[in-house]
Amino acid sequence: MKAVPCLAILLLLAGCSSFPKYTVTPVAGPGSSALGINIHGHTVGGMPGAGVDEHAFVNTGGGALNIGTFGGASSRAWGINDAGVVVGEADNIAGARRAFAYTAGLMTDLGTLGGPSAGARAINNDGDITGFAAIPAGAPRAFRLSGGVMQNLGTLPSTGELYSFGHAINARETVAGTSSVGEFAQPEPPIHGFVTRGAGLVDIGTFGGQVSEAYGINDHGQVVGTAETGRGFHDRNAFIWIRGFKLNIGNLGGGFAEAYDINNRRQVVGFSSGPAGQPQGFLWQRGKMVAIDSLVDPAAGWTITVARAINERQQIAGTGCRGGVCQAVRLDPVP
Image 1 (cartoon, rainbow, N blue to C red):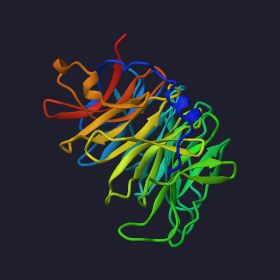
Image 2: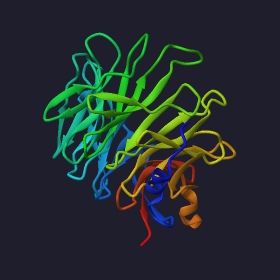
Image 3: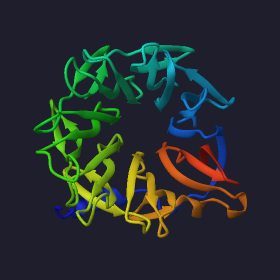
Image 4: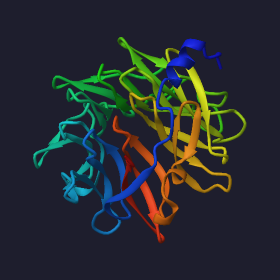
């Protein structure tokens, strides 16, 4: 791993000076999970549908609205922009998963790259979308949908089966995601996080293992994700990548962490295993990672198991448990 220059460190640490305290509000029923949030605090995610199926939901303040599917069994909403456009993936009547955009009660199929399936993972405020889509023959490719045109972003240099997934897109249409890379090696095929630059993909690399994934990006082009350390199978730390350098931001003591989102304040949220292996949502800022549980009044009885998204108002979307019931929640900073 390259040393992080002083300028990069200063940029990373130029965020909030103290951790906010939070209140917790359920945004969908038991068994649900929140995956995205916009500037208004509107949340999206997945909630139980019929039987064991999951359905996409959006909550704009009046309760969780079931978005439904394209006639198939299940769906999930991954992102929402400030205009309220929701993106995700939904099964059609033939059982194929399709990427969708939803607004004003209408769910639109975004198409594919020639194959049968696709999924949308993120949307920016200009309406540009990223995700993955099948090609006529072979595994899915990351795409960027802009101006009605779906562009195949390709993969990192790889041998064997090629595939990639777009997970996040910022205001400059820069995409962060995951791609196959290199040659197959045990115990698992190598995959690396990437960020787009021009017409190509930049390999984010790892901390010594075979696997990394990039899940979030802010408008400064700073990318967050997870990377194996090389100390053992699936021993991972969360990272921030900036201008070609990765900063290892660690974990909460359990040897595993994934960073899912970063806002323009350079606050990072994600999931980490705790010292006893318990799942914990985390917030990182100014060089310090804390369990979000520590930022919530213990009298409220909430345990935050994962934090998936954070907006510019420091609101967080994730999953919380209380009294043995886990569900989608929104965390609001206390004034």
